[in-house]
Image (cartoon, rainbow, N blue to C red):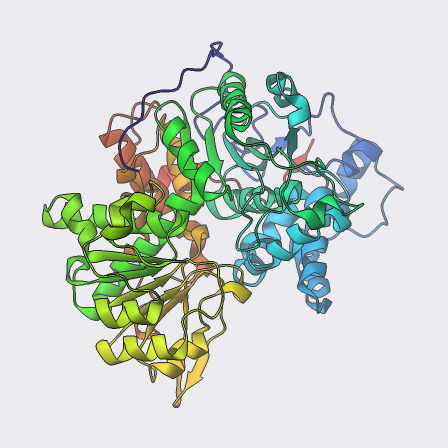
Length: 588
């Protein structure tokens, strides 16, 4: 966001292979075939026997029919019973529910993904509300912390400083060629847990499993990557089981050159239309990378832009409950990093488009508090560049409660990464100043949330409209049940990614993020509002993703940034037709 930087040149060899972009290329016809047509389980040759059962893309376990067992030399390698995918799913969900420790569920699901890909995604799609907290926040945070200990089989691609000068060669080692989405991290700021180095791989793996389950991107088109430039986490450096480079982080020119080689290699190997999602980079690198490559690559930062888009959607939806417009509000943020400034900028842009006021004016409705207090103009010279647009004229205020009392915000948003910072005094002050205070405690995982749902409802006597980053259970207060909304990026990035891919987008623009926010807000029903929800339930997330994808694609075509022409007539139906189905296929 902000000013447009000069394009960073990459020496890219043209690559005319089919299948690089477009969202629906399918070399072997396995997804274009109808469910009653036969497909061939190709690997480098036709997979059969033992090798077929060991290939997660084609393994069906006990669901291989007698005919398939005979044709593919499986007879005797499996017990005689034939089970349907539905029975397998029921059995696995029963087994998963026996685990009392969430990390055990995570490990069981990762084992399933490595053993039987379609059953893993069927399980995730059909039980998304139950399993999302396992494959994503909060459990994935614990998994990353313990990744070295639970590491069994590599998932994704590890690119370390040892490969400097030959990153393109490393990318070519990945067996799949038609990559459409890459999620990449350097592990420096994993959720609210800090520098986890190479163990941050759990984040790209988890995010891409959601691209498939929620957005319908084929698993073979997804590539998780961890860039290992070292770690400054002394505990990891001293850990004999740590799986990454045991050295301090590379910084400055060395870091910039390594990332530039990576970005150029990605474009050269996979083409112009591969979507690169930056994930959990530290603030200083996240803003620089997004600014540097947004004019030359199809890039997206979920921490800055995805969070902004999903929070804006919740705010737009909440206006239907409050009977106001965004321009009527005063916003106060606790936290002025990637998420906080990203959300603030998108809110300012939305208000500017609604009112016609210049963005410099609409920013004045938004105030940010960082570790040193309220960001004001007298601090401007000492501020990092991404905080400077939010330095407004005001006397110095040292803490959050002082800022709440001085600014009297109608919306309080937490992106600090520090738990329990929305104290009772702060929340009660919000309730004193507002009939229906809008409180969003967005930090992840749950332990880092600025306040819990129960605290928000109790301290405001049930008047708060509440949303959080991690899930909270419904709350009983004064005889009424309140359902806290989850401002989860999973609402946005799968549909956004699908929309970019199916339109053949070559760049990401803020207008596409606004389109995604508006599409998500439009999915919230009156019934949802009556239960206090400002987001739709996850149970119909694929339908939500299809609508977001259609809105994003429409905006891409409108902006002239789409390369898949002509434009489909019905973008929602086209989005649905592009989505991967995890239902088992019948083999010749």
